[in-house]
Structure formats: C-alpha cells, structure tokens
Amino acid sequence: MSADRREWPLYEVFVRGKRGLNHVHVGSLHAADDAMAVRHARDVYTRRNEGVSIWVVRADAITASSPDEKDPMFAPSGDKVYRHPTFYDIPDNVPHM
Amino acid sequence: MTTTPAEPEALEAAFEATIARHDRIEPRDWMPDAYRRTLVRQMAQHAHSEIIGMQPEGAWIGRAPSLRRKAILLAKVQDEAGHGLYLYSACETLGVSRAELTELLLTGRQKYSSIFNYPTLSYADVGTIGWLVDGAAICNQVPLCRTSYGPYGRAMIRICKEESFHQRQGYELLMTMMRGTDAQRAMVQESVNRFWWPALMMFGPPDADSPNSARSMAWGIKRNSNDELRQKFVDMTVPQAEALGVTLPDPDLRWNEERGHHDFGEPDWEELAAVIRGDGPCNAQRMAHRRAAHEDGAWVREAASAFAAKAGAR
Image 1 (tube, rainbow over the protein chains, first blue to last red):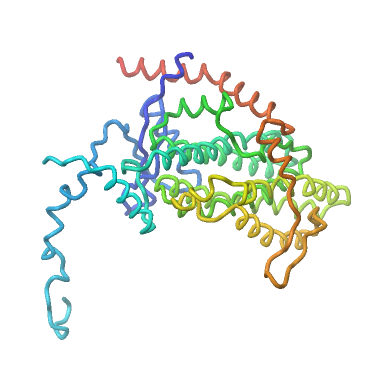
Image 2: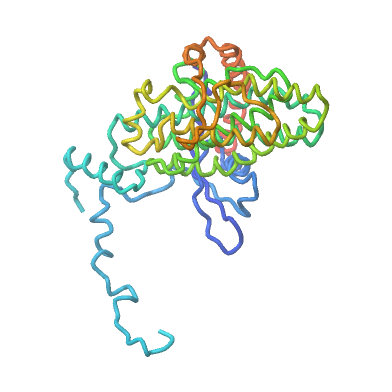
C-alpha cells in the first residue's frame, strides 16, 4: 500500500487533572509530530474538562523496568520493613506520634 | 543482574494465579497466546464498532432540527470516535499495529457490531439508538470495566462514563417527541419497533451457541454471559418504555413473578447470523463509506507526515 501505511509514532499521554495533582498516564495515541500529539491528546482525552495540562512523550523514549525482573528489581525494598512507621512500637499514651 | 528465563509451566501458573486473585494482566506480562488472540479479536471488534457506529447517527447531524440537537449529536459522534481510539490504543498494547487493525476492518476480516448494519430512517432513530442501542452497550460494557486485561478495563471505564450522556440524550429526545404531535409519537413507536429486536441481538447468540464464552469467562475477559446481560437489559428497559409511553414489539413480554424477571420472546437468530455474514440492510454501505473516508483522508495523513519530516530536518 501507499506511504500512509508507515505509522505515525506512538505517544503516551499524561494529564494533570487540576492544579495540585500530578500528571497521570491516561493512554496513548499516534501523531505525526509533538505539536499534533498535544492537539490530539486534547481532543481524545480531555473532552470533558479532565485536565488543565497535558504532557506527551514518544513511547519509544520511555525506559521501563522489565516485568520478568519483578522480584530482583524490587528486592532491595522488600526486606526493609524498618522504613515504615508502623515498624516502631510507641506506647498509646504518647501523643502526636 | 541475571535472571534465568522462567519455565513455560511456571509462567502459565503465574498467569493463572493473577487471574484467580482477580488481579489485572498488564501488557508486558506473559500471557497464553489464546488469551492474547481472544483479547485482540474482542477489543478490535469493539473499536471497529465505535468507528462504524459513527455512521448511522452521523447521517442526521446536518438534519437535526435545532442547533441544540446538532451540537449534542456532534458531541456524541465525536465521543464514538474517541471510544474507538481508546480501544485501538488498548489493543495495540498487545502488539498489533494500528495500520493492521485498520486493514483488517477495511478488508472485512474483522467484524463490528451487527447493530450498525441497520439504517436510521427517521430522526427518532437518533433517540432510539441513544436509549436502546447505547443502553444495551452500557449493559455489556459496565462489567468489562472489571475485565482481566488492564488497558481494556481502563478504556472501558472512560467509555462507560461517557455512554451515560449518550443514553440520556437519546431518552430525552424521545420524551420530547412523545410530548409532541400524534405523528411524532407514531414516529417514536415505529422507531422502537424497528430497533428492539436488533438491540436484543447485540448481546450475541444464546449462551448454548456461544462457543467462545466459557473460555472468555474463565479468563475474566467476560464477566457475565450473553443471556444474563440480555435479561438484565430487558428488565431495565421495560419500566423505561412505560415511562416513555411506548410499547415493545414482543407479544411474549411479561413479568414472571416466580423468576423475578421478565419473560420475553426469542430474537430471530437467523437474522443475526445473516447480518454478521454481511447480508444486513447496510453492511455494504457502511464498509464502502468507511473505505472512502480512509482513502479520502490519505492526503491529510501524507501532508502531516511530510510536514513533520520537514520540521524534523530543520
């Protein structure tokens, strides 16, 4: 088929729902360039005031941990219960702790 | 850090354990090929339905009777496009490309919902589609928000939020017509008569004839059987029809005290099979329109690519 079989790159879309919140991943879309990705993201993901700010990033620019390495990858935090406040016994009569 | 590749049995066991915990499967997780194939088929069919579904109602945008109704219909049809895009995106996380999915639709190798092969003969059909067709779609889709494949479930949550507007605008449109003249009331009734049975067919064949259902339910892709959802839809719709002042064209439709549900007649499954086969009233027209839209839009896609390439080279 013609040249349009070459796909536009995939972008991941992040939307800030309102001031004070983080940008959150909402989905993805194809666009020819960054500016079009932002415009398409507005039309596809914020038709009902879902956002006050949009980030788009090309999906091939994202580096992710591998699900196969799930256990070794997160092992360093698995055995460090002392990082959590509930690890420490404080008597009930001590206030504001 | 080195990791030894897990044995197939271990991978399968981990997958089954995730399903059993009602946890979600995410794109990069190992999954059985048949699970992936089933999802691609179901999600693609769903996405195609949203895209083809723009046509029956889109045909009335220019003829809607007021600016208010035009704006509503335009927003609704735009939503359908959005729903198609959410679902295509979710489907692509399984390793199929958008171009492939488009190709599979345009060449008729993947299906879309049979309901969109019926014509919209009067403006009342816009209301009936919102009320009955989107109503049936909501029944089907709400349980899919809890489907086992993460991206599919997340797409469904967005879609369900928006479908409620679709159903309500349709019902309100019909209510307005029912407050009008005798001719308008007759137009509503005639429209409901035409769409009732095709709407019931949207839930698919009876459970006994739905070969893929059991597998899909075991995998948590589907949460309810076709017949369960159809019954739920009938029970929900009967009081809505009464409130609207229309009758539903089924002589066997009556409340069954013992079952706590409505009994209703059997849809014409021959008709459903024919429409799926391609012999519905509008199959050829819908496909021709979609192909033409795709071809007519080629220059836009090419121009955007050329512009991006030029900007990238600067």
